Image (cartoon, protein in one colour):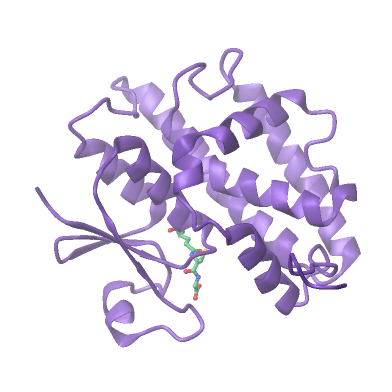
Amino acid sequence: MSSLTLVSFKACPFVQRAAIMLEEQGRAYDISYIDLWNKPDWFLEISPSGKVPVLKVDETPIFESAVILEYLDETTDQHRLLPTDPVERAQQRMWITYISNIMSKGWRLQAAKEEDDARALVTELRGHFEELLKAFPGDGPFWGGEDFTMIDAAIAPILQRFTWAETLEPSLGLFKDMPRMQTWRDALLARPSTKASVVPDLEALSGRMLHGLGSWVARGFVEEGSVA
Ligand SMILES: N[C@@H](CCC(=O)N[C@@H](CS)C(=O)NCC(=O)O)C(=O)O
């Protein structure tokens, strides 16, 4: 059996996708955290884009989160998440790509320094949620009904960050009047693999990081236990 090491940055939602998949599969893996503001040479040698995640399979690096998800699915001795039908496989892949674009826009929302920019991104993101809901099969709570799919693993991290963003700025209204999105989000956040895929203090760590970057959403971030 190959050894797996997930090269990670604690707050990265793309890394978290891979961690969720590993947790779902109950596979043993190591995590190696790097500082994205001071990338070590060994990391730049295995990550041409300079981005995490990288999954080291023994000494072979695999980068791009969607590719890592598929690699993990193809090498599991358990239930595979991607369907066998080529059209259904393509559909899952295309929505995972769509969600990756939501994640990039979601980062811009979290990091936006101006309220107008943040609110405009909320409007765009809600439009993307509507597209997802049009394609959402069945009654949920997961994309596969009671079955957790690769799409669920792919979207959980950004829905978690949107939830934290709304805790910081409740007026954002990302999920307002979208009960299906709320049910999906709640089921994903309650999933043991989602909980196990992050360090326990990640919400505070993310809030601190965003606040430090001058984020409008996190402008009121206060450390728990500190006096405002
Ligand atoms: N398309 C990539 C995106 C990964 C990504 O954007 N990672 C961010 C952190 S969340 C990163 O490593 N940024 C460092 C940089 O761009 O220098 C994937 O899906 O793996």
